[in-house]
Length: 176
Image: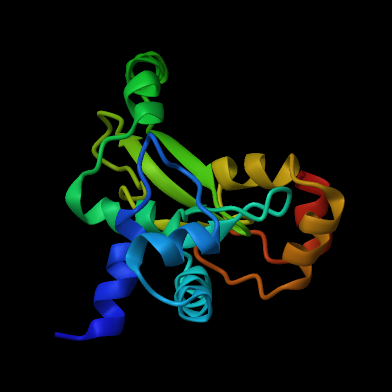
């Protein structure tokens, strides 16, 4: 048994609907480790995106990396169950593929896809991580981010995914 891994998993399992945020001290007390050990566990989990820190309160909550991992097990969440009827209706009306994507610091994570009936279609899969500059839905998210976040993303490497992927920051800024 790997004790540090067990403590990391114990930390993740502390979070629940009834207890969505915790302080490092609460984590230390709950899993029975010194405060310094709990801090190191939290920093490691945070570095991997499994835990996020609320900059206002300093409390920690589960990170969206867990949602990304859930794509492999068809995890259902409230947002999805609320949105799915509308997504199905939109896909049927438009005969286009419709996806639901959530924003996760400089990237999007696809949490649901309703594919069109067209024989030729391309869509991300549930759990796929998508760059915010590639594709209409990602660009819609990017266009509503604060200017400094947009600038940071446009300064980064813009990889070509398809012949239509905009990789020139000036062209992308114009589109946004």
